[in-house]
Image (cartoon, rainbow, N blue to C red; front, top):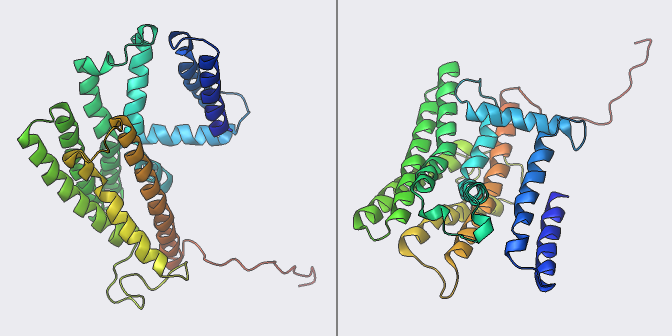
Length: 305
C-alpha cells in the first residue's frame, strides 16, 4: 500500500506537470506525502497495525537511547538495518532542511548543501547508526560479560572512522590526504566487516566442517547458494571504491550513482538478513532455546489417558 501510494504520487506529480502546472506549484506534494506517512506511523488509533507500529517505535526508542535499555535481538537487528540506510537518513536530512528552510518556495536545491550546519549534521547522520550499534555492543558486554561483544564494538568503531573519512573527502575531494584516509579506513573496516559477516554472523568458514568453508548444519540443500552469497557479499562490500576512483558513467548524475549504490547495499543487507537469521535459529536450536521441527498434526490425547 505504501509503495503504491508513492508511485501514484509520482505519477500524479508528472501528470500535473504535463497539464501546465509549474514546479513551484507542485513542491508541496512530496512534503505532504512524507507528512502523511509520519502521521500514519504516530497515529494513536487502532488502525493500520497499531500494535506493530507501537513495537517499531519502541524499538527505535531503544536504539536511540542505547545503552540505557537492555538489548534484545529485535533491537540490534533493526539497528543493523539502519547502518545500511545511511544514504536514506542523509536524504531525509536534506528533505527536512529543504522544507524547513523554505527553499522549496524558490526552488533553491543547493541552499542546504551550501550551509555549514548542514555539512556538520551530515557527519552526525553518518555516525549515528554505527554509534548506536556500538553502544548496544557495550551494553551487551556489560550484561553478558562476553568479550566478543567488545570485538563487535570495534567493528562499528572502524565503520564510524570510515564513514567520517568519506564525508570529509566528499567535502574536500581534492585532498590527497583525505583520499588516503578513505582508502586506509575503508579497507580496514571492510576486512573487519567481512570477517564478522562470514564467521560470527553467518557462522561460516568453519575449516573442520563437513561442508567445505561452510558449517555442518545448513538449511538450504544447494551449497552453491552459500558460496555465491559469500562472493556477492565481498563484491558489494567493496562498493565504497566508487568514492575514491570516481567511476561514474559519462553523462550520469552523481545522485543517480548514489541511488544505485544505495540499492546495492539494500540487496547486500537482504542477503545478510537471511543468513544471519538462519544462523540464529540453528544456534538457538543447538542451545535448546528453539526447535527446528514442530511435528504436525498434534495427536489428540483421550480423556481417559
